[in-house]
Length: 237
Ligand code: PXP
Image (tube, rainbow, N blue to C red; front, side):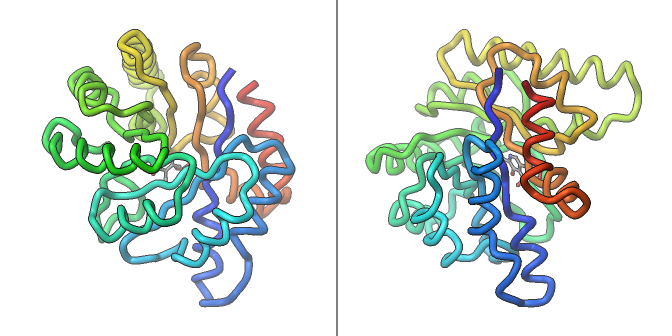
C-alpha cells in the first residue's frame, strides 16, 4: 500500500497571487500531516514562484513526518538543499516558462551532473530520488548513478483521454516500476494524479509512495485541506 506525500506548493501559489502572508504553506503542511500525509513535498524553484527560501527553512523546522524537497541540479539550489537538509531530495528538470514540471529528468544525458549532485546529497545523509519518465534506460541509469529511489512521472498517464491509451500507459508504468524494483531501486510515482485516476496507480504493488499536490489543494477549496487529504488517502488504501 503506497504512502501519500502531499505537495503543498499550490498553497504558496495562492499566497503569491496577492503577495500576502497567507495562506501559509507551513500551516498547510501541519494540517496535511494531521490528516494522515506521510510526507510533505515542496519544490523550491529558481524563480521562487511559490515556495521561497524562508518557507523551506520553516518547513524543515516544523515537518514531523518527512520533508521531500523537489529540486533542480543547479548549483544555487543544491547549495540550499545541503544547508537545509531535507530528509529526501527529488531531482527534477526545470524550465523557467513551464506551468509545472514537464517530463522527467534526462538522467542518461546528464549522467555526470546527476551523479555529482547525488554524491553531495548523500554525504549529508539525504535520500535521493530521481523524477524520471517510465523508460528502461532512464531507470537503469538511475541505478548506475546511485539513486535510492526513482519517482515515475505519471503525467502522460494522467493526461490520456482514451481507455486504450490509458491501459497502455498504465502497463508502461507498471512494468517500469517492477523493473526498477527488481534492480534494487525504491519506487515512487506522481504528477497529475487525482481522485479519479489514482486507484489504478496505487494498485501497482512495488510503489512505495505517491506524491500528489494540485488535485488535493484544488479539492481543499471545497472540502478543506484535512478532508481532501483523508479522501485521497482513503482512495490509495
Ligand atoms: N512529483 C513531482 C516530482 C512533481 O514535480 C510534482 C509537481 O510539483 C508532483 C509530484 C505533484 O504533481 P501534481 O501537483 O500534479 O499532483
